[in-house]
Image 1 (cartoon, rainbow, N blue to C red):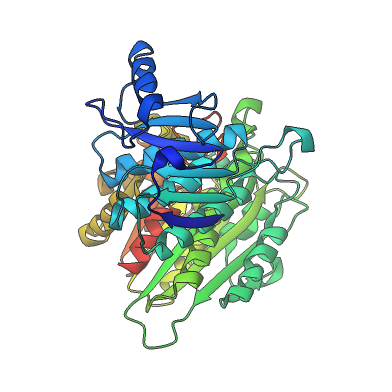
Image 2: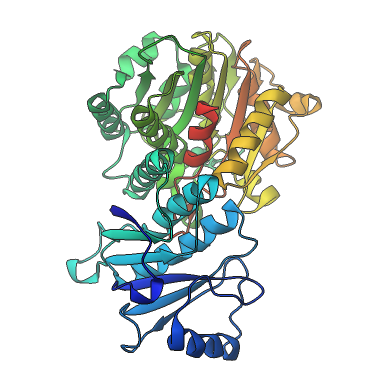
Length: 474
Ligand code: BES
Ligand code: MN
Ligand code: ZN
């Protein structure tokens, strides 16, 4: 998408779609002459308010050089409100296939400008790859920011590109995206200047990663372990890690899911998709921070070799796990990844995973759950999430619940029962982090939307790419 900054009057913009903001007090962000008067009357008649989340598109019937106008609620005008408003403008443009778009929100700068750009791109995205040619709608080719003379969009562009990549990876069917092809895509990041190491199933087993091995062994698609490194040119200010769950399809294994529960389980690699997207953004931004992106990629399937209930797994850190449910596979994969990452001596690490349905029960599908024993790590992620416009809620990592994981034959079992299921999953992970400051993000809710939600088209959302990119740069 080409981007222009221009000082022209919105009333003279000859574009497919002109996006205008509306304040809750009823003020339009652009002077549109006689058309503006008619528009104001129509807005009132249709009870369109300037609240965040409102949007309404209108044809201009030749009264303006712009073909259509979309009015979007500016809410309180905060960066977060601008993100949503621009997102709705992007969504309106994509729904109609509008190629040239002008945003007339008035002067934008700093965090507001960054948020508006990221929001626009997120709203303008929808995955048309699998539609018939005739059903596709073009994304925006040229975006003009009216009344904005200049601005630094380096961060916004890197985040938007990374998020789009993450969404495309999540949307790809599991028949196309499986551990080996995910590893190939990660390897493609070498072209961006990153170092990429991929282990096959024998190397994974030889390294003692009993969790990844067990979950992956039921599939004809062998597991892969992926380690992506960004090493800055000069001295590194700190060394950080992001670790993603890459279950490219979660059938539940022998503890089989229901058809409804399985339908969208290609999204179970959304954590790893975020890691790939963030690493791409980091490669573009080149910060003075060393970043390790680690992914355990498996397909959780049923087969003659599938892991079984009652199996005891020896994990990478030597702890053993009794399998009580093969559908609690993400923690087994991440346990090995976290143990490996803890050996790198990082200053902090965050894992990100579509880990539990219980998380969605607790927080609904808009919020990610955050767990950490370290307040400073948790606070730094909450701050990055606020800046990135993402909803994250800190949950208790209550050690008293650890006894729910007690097993008869092994260090622990892989399920803690229904109460607090997202918490016991996080406690399970905490057994593998060693002494590295750590946080866990359960994105089971917002990783994937089955229907249009806010300015997001159905499918993968690329959630936590805005947050984690900012967290790494902080
Ligand atoms: N991938 C699922 C969690 C999930 C559910 C993600 C819904 C996105 C939307 C995970 O592997 C899983 O199956 N968890 C089980 C754990 C249980 C068996 C302890 C769950 O949540 O039911
Ligand atoms: Mn599962
Ligand atoms: Zn899963």
